[in-house]
Image (cartoon, rainbow, N blue to C red; front, side, top):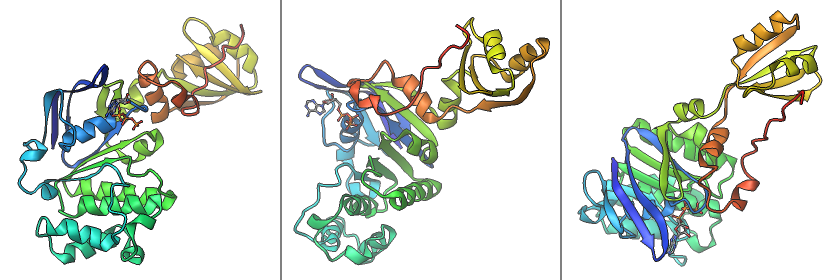
Length: 315
Ligand SMILES: Nc1ncnc2c1ncn2[C@@H]1O[C@H](COP(=O)(O)OP(=O)(O)OP(=O)(O)O)[C@@H](O)[C@H]1O
């Protein structure tokens, strides 16, 4: 378990983390999501004792990281996949780490196998691709079979097979009762991987809830409507907080009304409707809604979540 209380980090005039409190629980995958510069890496570094908090506290399994006698058995972290001694082979790198905690060679072989590094284990880590470096970083994090895992952008640089592998691995570890804390910019990835999300924007927590609640809670109901009288129905529905977007001749997307209310309007005007489908909002939509006021560098999001402003028909 990870527990942060009023945790803050200020660099000169810059407040990177503005006093956050949260709990990351065992037995589930918790995603740490936020735009660039939101404070994710700084928070993770403070958890790992690599950055001293300006104020507040953070503990891992009940103690500050530095007070654990055998930290590799408590918490494994992937914070910077490039932080590997480049001249050493992957095997020797892991062996050297293992030696600091009297971890047997057998475990080194195990983590190499778990991370699919067998073929390159004797090669110098300096020549590794980004994806291989990520796998090695994850192998190192798993070495002490820790109760808590902290992975900063673990799918960064991985191919689709690697992404799937990370997803299955973290799920497996959470099912074993471990605490898994994972950061990512990839909202779609989080939707498939995490059970619970902590969303951070400009150093503050803006959501801390199960993924399902975040998806369900932030958007107004949207309904796909198919009708042979699209312009007529659009003008009947639009206005008073209801927006209607016509994407195809017989297709409308209605925001702000429940399907039953749309059907009622259509019925009372004699308009034929042949499909009414509630649209589930994606995590990407929810994330964009949550963070739209919290983005430090707006340009970083312009190529990101595609949330088209609905056009209002009939105006
Ligand atoms: N050593 C430092 N000195 C000064 N400012 C820093 C330092 N480290 C981070 N910051 C600033 O603190 C803020 C939070 O940075 P942080 O790296 O924690 O964000 P992040 O959410 O991990 O972002 P990204 O996804 O881009 O890595 C940013 O504005 C960053 O520029």
